[in-house]
Image 1 (spheres, protein in one colour):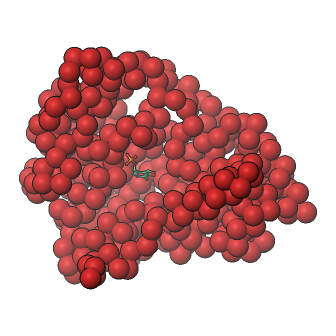
Image 2 (cartoon, rainbow, N blue to C red; image 1 turned 180 degrees about the horizontal axis):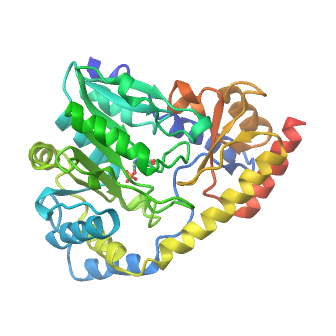
Amino acid sequence: MTAKRLQNITESATIRISNLANELKNQGKDIISFSLGEPDFNTPEHIVDAAKASLDRGETHYTPSPGIPELRRAIVEKLKIDNNINTIAGNIIVTPGAKQAIFEVMLSVLEEGDETIIFDPAWVSYDPCVKLAGARTVWAPTTCDNGFTPIGTGEYITKKTKLIVINSPCNPTGGVYDKSTIKEIADLAVDNNIMVLSDEIYEKIIYDKEHISIGSMDGMQDLTITVNGFSKAYAMTGWRLGYVSAPKEVYQQMVKLHSHSVSQATSFVQYAGIAALQGDQACVQNMVREFRERRDLLIKGLEKLGIKCTRPDGAFYAFADVSEYGSGEAVAEVLLNKAFVATTPGAAFGKAGNNFIRISYATSKDRIKEALRRIEAVLD
Ligand SMILES: Cc1ncc(COP(=O)(O)O)c(C=O)c1O
């Protein structure tokens, strides 16, 4: 009775683990959650105030489907200043979360028989979106030896390659692609006329490296679809606000899908988005400072326990190699059931993650210290 297109797609593994952790929590266990992909900070006050003011002004009606003009213009400005990307408001769609933007991109670009290159390990929703579009994922493994950044991407290109997905800083590895890596992918895209979907949602959560947008590279303007959102940089996960800048041809297809499905992002949330982009960015800097301290604390602690983990350069995840103790899945299960520490098995993000667990350090330093103590006790 149900459609085949969904039968080989499974529930997001990150959600499955958090459900298990919640079950234990409901039994009264003190669970330390290292599994969630969301900042533990409150949304900055000036953004909340902007939403309240919008509600007070009665901005509770339908907006234009691709978004309110003021926000689309603010996004164009942001992409120019932060990312050196030249676009126009007419190429921007404001979406309820970056996830919706990614889904719409896949459905608009891909069709049966097409291949999409995804670097393994990768965020859990890219491959299901590719499948929903009827296309196929070609997994290109990355390794911790070079900070989980792509090498030899050309080997995975075939006549069927339509799209390459990049995500820097990367969820789940925290890897950040440097300029030469981005340039290599851009050159391949230009030479082979392949589109690139660049998911830049963690761009602001970066420590010692510089974020480079592939859409700023020579020849990439008409081949890049840039996706970003407010969830991570502004601690706005529940608001559901993201956006995409797409070349005209792609935009024209996406906008149809957008208008016939979600219609638009929530009206007053879009006004809050303007406040986020145009307001004081000190809130972002403060969050990043805190994330950096947590990262350093966690990495030092893991090192002391003898757990191998490349120091992440961005996002708020550490991807730890636990092969000495078992598969990522087995170790995550032991950590949850014995130490009451919820992590995510690396396999949730692709085969290259089999020996790893993802540790989200979007939790306080005290909880990180406590988790390290518990992990030590279990490993002993
Ligand atoms: C890499 C990546 N892209 C996109 C998203 C989706 O973000 P949003 O909350 O804007 O839908 C996430 C959320 O976890 C993510 O980690």
